Each structure stands twice: as structure tokens, then as C-alpha cells.
Image 1 (cartoon, rainbow, N blue to C red):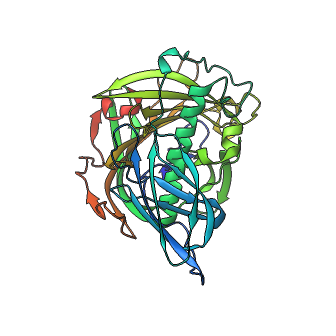
Image 2: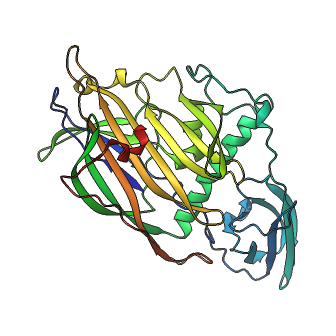
Image 3: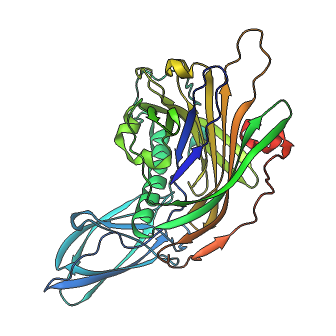
Length: 394
């Protein structure tokens, strides 16, 4: 999905800067990934997935048979059915956010049903013994060592699981959502709304991450020279290219309402010689579901000379649950900070707010409402709102 921070003309350079946000982690959940064609001797696998400690069913766990390129989510009650499986032995993996994966082998008999009931162990958290890591530098990027940094490695694995669930959902159950956007300027004490619009975004949109290649230049007769910043978000965490050029560390916990969120810090590798992203991810300590992403452009000093006045790009994305194990993007807040020349007064900061209005699945998702609408914010062009409206700057 594509989010665009609309350009605001830089009064010093006359150039434009866009930040493009590809939303990953809108929703987690889904159905059959790849159809398995029936063969002359096939059988069926029926099963369920429960939590080992509580015996509670685990909806939207992923059941995977890699050799057959087959993935399926359990339904809202933790049950699943895989039909048309070739007779013989198959390696099965079952995973769920917040739980240790299960791996085993099942034997499928022709013209019969095999039963598989699995209980997943909840991941233990011993974060009180983990030191908060200083992320001022990233000299040795890559995935955390699973032995030396076991807890951090586990947190990064859960981030990747959040991303992989979204990828599977987007492939199997395409959906669209509508959002309202307010674009304007953040001034001393107010946010001046310059334009409000509504857009429809499709789940199938993808942006390929390339290390240090976030800012690109395009030229057209209609718009002249423009610069676009493609901000990698959750779905890029399934890409090894992203993991290999970032460092990850434990950032402590915060209390938000009744939940405790675990912060996972992220920093771009020092060796990158062009802008990328730093940031933090916040996971609910109880469910390991992603609650918020904070992303900042790294090394703005390495931007093209035409963008020398751009001092920072800051984007925060928040999520909300729609069912157990399922979440959607609720809001996005983005601000471009411009560097102030010596002796000049503070410059207005181009800002954008985005708010979810509704979502609708193109293909119905079992046990989840096919469509839902939300109360729209009261944004109108020309309004002067409190500075606190731009919540990512607080």
C-alpha cells in the first residue's frame, strides 16, 4: 500500500521532496496461499492449533508445507483443513505471532483424512535482564546473534512474522482501504490545513527495498524536477537485504493504556553512503503484535544538493486490532523539517496526517467482518488546528 507525503515547495531551493510510505502490517490473517491440484492418490489433513499453557484456540496461525509451496491460516477458532495433499510424508511447520514455531512430519494416506492437533508454546520474555542498547552507531549490521543476543533475535523474528503474515494475507485476500489526508504546515502553535482529500489504497502495492536508495529523482514536463523518498516499512523486514544493513537492539518498555509495549530500536549501517532509515518498532509484550512504527530518514546531510534545506523526515504509523491476531493501520503522521539558515526565524514544517476511514476485503476473510467504517476526523481546508493535532511531534 502506498502512502504519499505531498510535496511542499522548499522556499530556498524551489525543489520538491516527496516521502512515499508503503504500508505493511495493515492486517494480519488470511487463507489458502497456493492451490494444490488434486492428484490420483491424495488425502486430507485436518487439524487445530491451541496455546499450550491455556489450551485457547489460536486463530490465524500459519500452517505451511514448504515442499508443496502451500500456506494456510487457521480460521477464527484455530482450525484448518488442507485438501488434495499427495499421499506420503510431509514436513509441516506451524507458527503464530508470540509463540515458538512447531515443526513435525505427518503421513497422508490416499482417500483418507489425517488429524493433526498442535499446541504452541508461548515465547518466554526475560527482557528485564536485557540491557538497553545504545544505537548511536551501527558498525556491524545484520540479524542479532541468536545465541549472544537471544532475546533481541526473538523480537526481530516476531517483527518478521508480523510482516510475513501481512504478505500472506495480501496475496490471498486482497483488500482496499480508504483514508482521509490533511496536508499543511506546522507552525509555532498551530497546524494550518492547506488541503484535505480521500484516497483508496490497494493491498497489492509493493516497493522493492534497495539499501541506501530511498531518494530518487524524476523529471517531467508537468511537474519539473521531483525527489521521492520511498520509506521501507514492515513488509521489508521479510527481505534479508534490509536486515543485513541495519542494527537492532532492545530499547526498553513503555506503558500505553493497559498494555506494555516493547521497543525494538533500529539503525542504518554506518557504511551506507546515502540516506536510509533509522527508527523503532513497538510490540505488545503480551501478543507480540506490532502497535507502532517510528521511522526517520538517516543521514539527511547526504541528500542531493537540491535538497540541502531538508533537515529531517519523520513518519509514525499506528495500528489497531480488528480481531484476535489481526490489525490494521489506524493513522499516519509525517513531518518534514527544514534546516533554518543562520539568523532566520523558525520555518514552517510541511506535515501530513492520514486517518483510516474504512476497509473492505475484495475476497471475504473467514470470521472477520468484510467491511468496516470509522468516524472521520473533522479536517477542512483552511482550518487552523492545535499543534497537538500533529501527534507524532509531541
